[in-house]
Length: 536
Image (tube, rainbow, N blue to C red):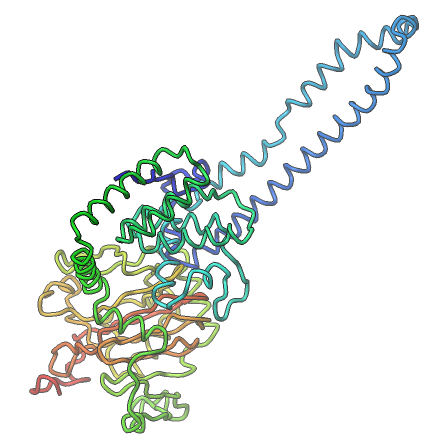
């Protein structure tokens, strides 16, 4: 079976060489903002170059207009014109000197400043991995939030401040990236969107022949032979000599004739249904469905009886001297596992300080590899993070003390404050914060035992998406700037609470900043005594 060749993903490949300065831009909105300033600087440089070129062309234009008049006069009576000695001298001078100067002006490169700036800046440009990562993020958002291609292409997303849209060429690029991943489902969706926009009259450099070439093959790969034939016929109407399409058409006709002859259509339908069922079982596990539903604000709801057990209160940290006269606002988010939210618990000034400290250190977020016990980057966590110690800033130290006062747990054995910024479609798929029994060495190097509890600050509001969800129990906790949520990962017995499995939903619109503190078992022996009952 012939299939379309794979073109280079990067439309501006000559500007995007590999560089050691590359830092996975797509995984952090915070780092992507630097690219805005870089592009602005390049635009200023480009405009300076344009002004210089326009000035050069203006000089050439004046020279041409002057010579046009002069030569018109001279050619009408060449001998009479040259009979004037001054004209003869000036002709010699023009051809010997001035035309040479004009040649130098025409050939002069006015782009030195722009090219020099571009050379310096290009080492910090995103590369193919970033473009592919951003494209995959759009596809992930499309699936998670049930967005059709037209809605996404037109930019009709909730809470957007700066509306943008995808051109037919953009849709074509998304389809190609899906194609390189053998993701024929999304290839079909985005190639059809590109075709639709072209059929509606959009002026674009995207070619219908190329689009139909990809589209027909993607459709064929998904088992819809009749549609593949229809699309290939449309391609051949545009380009009757298309070699691959003619070869595909013959192959399709051969397959169809073979099926008809053997009368296997019913069997094929059954086989196809089985394949589709297998794909659904593999790609759409129950947890995945629950996770995506919770991200959309759907899914399980707490019964009214359970809801009545949730309260808002003023909390003094169990008579902590710092909060007796000024208790904090606390509200219950969920009962089992118990998740509480603290309101107005971190100020805007503290948030900005933490962000400024973290930004220079942001790097691709890592996770514990259960096999090696070491930290590694993972495709299911799209964000960048940094670690802040209490000794390096009084603000961080004050935050650590606040966590200790309000949880009653010792933070001296806790991990450093982790600050995370999520990128395009940034997410962290369902996971546990604590180490399970099959991961005995996960925190061995720390020597502080398992992660007993999690404290999570929300340092920004998110226009759409970005919830923290608990698929096992159906809880959705939405980001609210200045608040924090807290839950225990372990029962008092030290056994892991598997209902705390949680995830960070993809950010649909906005910029998500969070910081978290993982508190460990050591040092909590008298603060949270052990119990004999495993699940108490």
